[in-house]
Image (cartoon, rainbow, N blue to C red; front, side, top):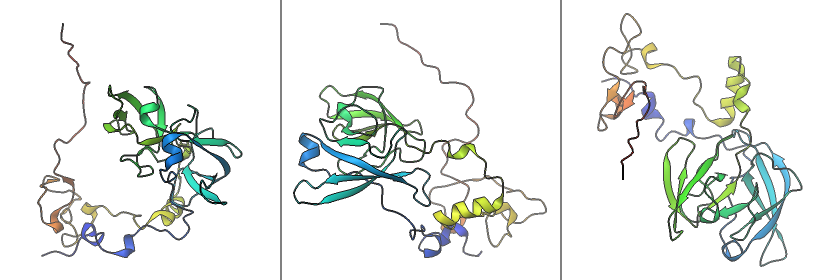
Length: 257
């Protein structure tokens, strides 16, 4: 019986929880209301700010409250080209321009979007990382479903009334500059959570990891494991359908009519 491995310690422990002390705010759309469903509402970008632990900058957008004499401050993931003082419009009748928020079934095919909702009213789920974006592939005939291509390349069908922001998430050039030294990586992950530095399993002792031990650093057995493997053994390629490099290209055979 070995020691409790790292993957098990990540379960209920607060040591590995996300660092939220210096976070600005959750980046979400407005709560879906009558104004967005039937028309549009105008907001103004007051500031573009850095959110510690997040690659993309946040846009501080101020809307007038539809029911009370007050202002509502919302924080969106900023898109490239957004600037302070810009007017952004959210709603079904908003115009097709960068920074506006519309239902996906009103966007033409090929539109580049970000921060797309997966379920109606969840206020943004897909393509939220810096430099990421999704693309509208097509719509169903009745407009109730829309097909989008996610940053991973996966195609997904969402409800046509789900909202998305037009444009590419800002901060895409963040990875162009290398970290160069370990101290920079330390500060990067200090803002995120405790998961750096990460010791390799083959560098451990047999008691600490299934890949540990041996006269040379090698696993010694297949790194793929079953889905129902015990918790202390469940490391490596879990329930992998296939392994290795994907070679060649996909051949599409067109059927003759």
